[in-house]
Structures are given as C-alpha cells and as structure tokens.
Amino acid sequence: MTTKLAIFAYDGCLSTSITGPTDVFHIANIHQRVRKENPGSPLFSWKIYSPDGKPVNTSTGITIAVDGRYEEAGDPDICLIPGIDHAFGYEVTKKTEEMRSLMGSLIKSHHARGAAIASNCSGSFLLADTGLLDGYEATTSWWLAHHFTHSFPKVHLRLEKMVTEQNNVFCSGAVTAYMHLCIRLIERYAGQSIAKCCSKTVMLQNKESTQAPYIPVPHHFKQQDDLVKNAVQWMQENLDQEFHLDTLASRLAVSPRTFIRRFNQATGKPPKQYFQKLRIDEAKRLLESTALSVDDITEKVGYVDVSSFRRLFKREVALSPTEYRKRFSR
Image 1 (tube, one colour):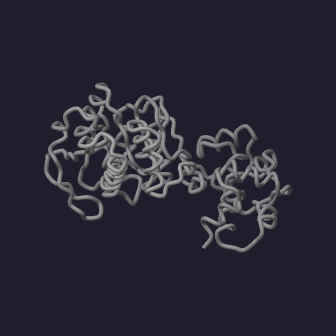
Image 2: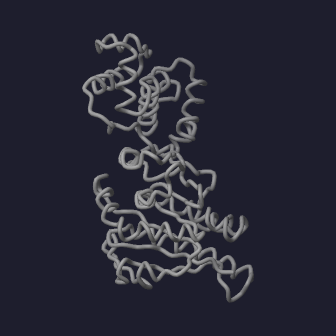
Image 3: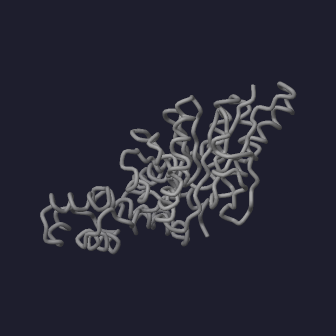
C-alpha cells in the first residue's frame, strides 16, 4: 500500500523543504525495488500543492511546478509544511500571519481526518498557528526560539530535539533536520528495516537526534530590563568566578528575591542556570577556536573538577568536550 504525501508549498518557502524530503522518500522507494517487495506499488508517492495551483517561487529563486491547489490535495496520509525563508524572526511572524487564512483550517481538517501533519524548520510556526500544537511538544530552528515562545506560549518548545512527535503531529528542527523527520516517517509507514537502509544511504546517524550542540545561550530577552543586562554583563566578565546569588543581587542593589523574579521574567531562566549556560558557551568557543586542553578550559570557565565539567558538558551539549572539538574546531 502506497503512503500518500501532500506538500503544501508557497512562495518564499525553503526549496530544500520540498526537494529534500522527496529525495529521501524516493530513496525509500529505491530500496523497496532493490528488495523486489510489492513491485509496481511504491512505498511513497507525493504531490505538491500551492494556494492558487500556480508554480511556487522558492527562497532560492527556483520555481517548482505543482500538482494543484491546496483544496485539491484529496486525502493524503501525510501533510508536509515547508520552512519559511527568513533573515529575521519578524519575517517568519509576518509570513505566518499571511498564510493563516490559506492554510490554517485546511491543515486542521486533514488532521481531524487522521492525516499525520509534519513541518520542517520554521514551518513549525505555520503549524503552531493552527493550534494543533497547543499543549504539546514542538521543535523548530534553534535560532528562532525566542520568537516561537513569544508567539505560541501554549506550545512546549523542546529546542534540543531534532524531531518531536505528539498527537500525530511532527516537527523537525533547523533546515536539514528534514532528513531526521523523513527517516522517522519512513520508519512509521514502511518499517524499521527500510528506514535503517535509508539512514545509511543519506549518511545519517540516528543517534544524532538533538540540536543541543548548536544552541547558544539566548541573548534576546523577553523583557528589556537594565538590571538584567547589567547582571548578564557581570556574568560574561566573570565566568571564572564562583556565582553567589546574594552577592550579585547586592551589587545590583536589589533583594535576591527581586533579582530572581526579574531575571526569570526577562530570560526565562534562573540566574545560576543562565550563568552555567554562559560558561558552557564559552567552553564551546574555546574548544572551537583554541588548542587549550580540556583541563585548561575547565579552569577558564570556573570549574575545579574536570570530571564534573565533562559530565556537565555532555549533559548540556549531548557531546563530550573532545567530541565537540572534533566536530566543530576551526
């Protein structure tokens, strides 16, 4: 039985969000042919739709032909929402508002009928805007976290995840995370064996299912607060010092309770946790750009016990310091 995929394209979407998934699903069909399973009936078929049935002009200027209008998609098993091209978060918000009347009710009706709904990259904004993610986990491009949480406070953003799946709704992380998404869908609809073959073909290691190594400490705050800015500046300049909440609050001339409340409101994190993430960010920078030993880096970011630092780094980044350096050193 063939699983039918409908891709809801639009002007300005990421071309890789269309061509990438179709390539991966095509690879699944090739593996089926090699195995000589169900000849003549491919595992997956796909069609591309646009709001008006006209070709879409993608973010790279590539024009992609379509098979019809959104409402002509019929009864697909999977609906895929491509990512939005953007340089700034407000551009994603603007496009989401623009597409609301064209895509919102349509996607919800397909979901109600039983179709799996999937988004790639910033396409999660379009998906979240339908309300289908309210109360559920989602992921998106890691650099859009601030804009996503501000726009959709009812959605549980799990930025470290490469793919989320709840309520028959799938989200994938930044850009090429579409490969992880497709492998997950192939496993669901065609089985683990075919999915594993596809992973090997596209050279995707399934264990790398996290965006954690790429996520920096957020510097876009929910609220502008000079006290918080001054606190963060002190933290950045004193990463090798011990963190004492009472001492920093006193330096800022507020009570510890007030400091915690205002810091949480602005950053979404307690001061000590934010300070720890700044230390990890600096360790990542040093691993990427210097030849300093892990022991030296541990000391520079304020930790005494190297073993404890290694465990903390692995927990936060999903890679050991040595693994991180091998992957990202310049």
